[in-house]
Amino acid sequence: MKEIFLLFFIFLFLSSCEPTQDFKGEIIPESKTILSLLNSEKSQTQKAISYLNQVIEEGSSSHLYYLRAKFLYDARQYKKANRDILKALKYSPRDLDYLLLAGQIAFDLENYTIATAYFNLIKPNVGKQSLILFFLADVAIKVNDLTLANFYLNQIPQKELNQKDQIYYSTLKNLCVLKKVPSTLFVKNMDQHIMNDVRLQRIYFEYALNFTSKFLYQNQLLKLMNENPNDPHLLRFWARFLNQINQVKMAELIYQKVAGIFDHNDYLHVEIGNFYMSHRNYRQAILYFNRIKPDLTSFADVPFLKSKCYLYLGDRNTYQSTLDSAHLLLKNDARYYQLKMKHFGILKDSSLSVKDSLLTIEP
Image 1 (cartoon, rainbow, N blue to C red):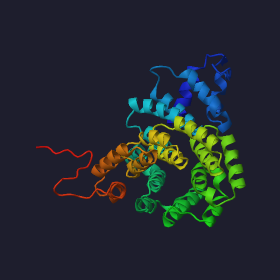
Image 2: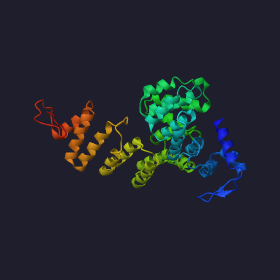
Image 3: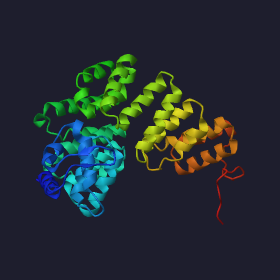
């Protein structure tokens, strides 16, 4: 009903408008074509976005921001979609459709903590329960909590799923069983279905590079990138592929482009930091590691990687202070103390005759 209302509202609003030209030089259609335009296929999505750009102005209805966010999401312009859905939520913070779209956008921006918060808010909604459980299970797999992923998947009524969701369900189940180490057979079975489901596309390209020919992987990925040029995930897979075939400079450019598309993506920063480390550009790696927030699931690895960067740069003082800080922050992680022992020969000393570089004693 909400979308019908929105379409009807836009139809009335523009009923007296003549064809106009937007800032890109595209012709905005007359009002009589608006309903077919806003319900059209993906090839028309950008025209719908351009049309809504003409309609929306400061103080516009939250429904219009939601509608544009939905089209931007379908066009895989997640950063722009996120800005619009946040504006919609500002005026209607309890709307279930708005919260669902906000969760989907946060998921695709890999802001998994925020996405989980949105999905848990609307989880009691029976009509959307299977969809929410799918997202929660996928998030759990992304952060390597396979027990939680299985918990969510077991709540999904599998017999009620359509064929596409059945395939998605089986794929997530297999990932849990295989402990995120897919096999050649797993990738081969997915290959038949990936082109029709964006969820399976992401999973396939995440793992297929090591289980299929580079020629096939390249052709499949380039075809999808041509159809979806705004998708930051496909660009990220392309950067990984370029790195694997030793096109390092080009991979670096793509990574930098992806970093500009994603909004504060700590998982991406870890990946790019590791990319620079593998090519001995330690200063650039440190820049990306410094962007990562302490609440990231894999944050325990970050100070360890930073300390190694300083070690390879020959900066022993910063290396030591980084180890000391990490050891104070992550007291149960023995790697830092062992690494410090290896390079500095510092032992625990109850008399404090030997002190950590950051240790302070208060009277």
